[in-house]
Length: 118
Image (cartoon, one colour):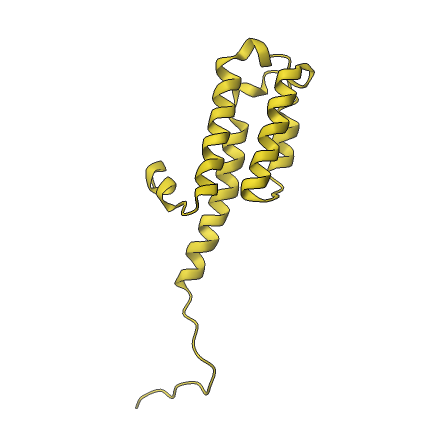
């Protein structure tokens, strides 16, 4: 599955907005590296990470993947890795797979089992 196919599989605008927020936050941290190089000691880095965490939790709901992501953002230099984007990918991948698996299951009406033909 290509990234474009994956992005199209995200049906809700909340999931797409979460991707945009995560990519924008990671791009800002990489592009403005001198402001965020101190990791958890940088007020700009801490503020951005708290805002991104709040927005992503509001959009996607609480998921355990956000906790290690927030912790990794405190490490100096870890901002060079797109941690927010990876977390959103993990959360939405799980949601997309769960939705696609539920469509494959055939639910039969209650009643006696059909008899095999002879």
